[in-house]
Image (cartoon, rainbow, N blue to C red; front, side, top):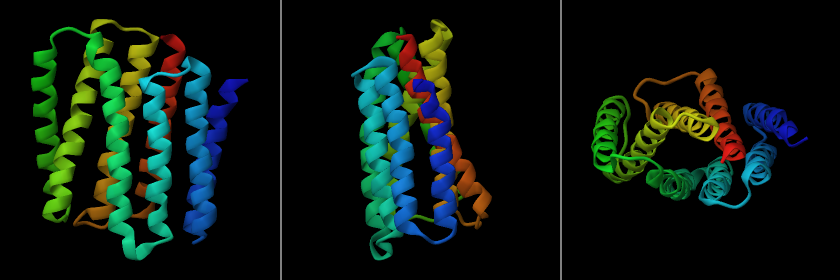
Length: 216
């Protein structure tokens, strides 16, 4: 029965995107929040309370905060940064949960930082953003890259339901974030299909992370 939350989440996400496209920001925000509640509920049902569940809950809160950009356009950047800070806290919760699971932490740290630097170099060559946003982005994607490195390390060293699903979810999540930044700040304007793509990647990633808790 709990797996019904998966199509429910995706349907609500589709409804949110449709409402947003039709310029109904309040309805879009409501549907967006409900879609995020679905993956939080799935995480709770799969694995109970844990740091991973806390990360899912923080993602839900961040979703709502980011959605407020559409209602308060004059404070768009403020809500973007606030939502990103909450997401960063969620990534930190995920990282704290999975970092101790594997070996070679020094190598994982080096690989994560190298991947983060490469990603930032590529991303910042394609977007227009001020110094404050770039500085925050360095911290944000630095932590996210460490999370990806730890998740991949765990999946490679000890493949199993939790490690593989969690790693897949994290990779979809970071792909979503990269597309979000390109869509929001890119020098080249991307069409609305990219908005749909990064949103669906995000929900798919969070759903996989929630499902991974069923294998802990």
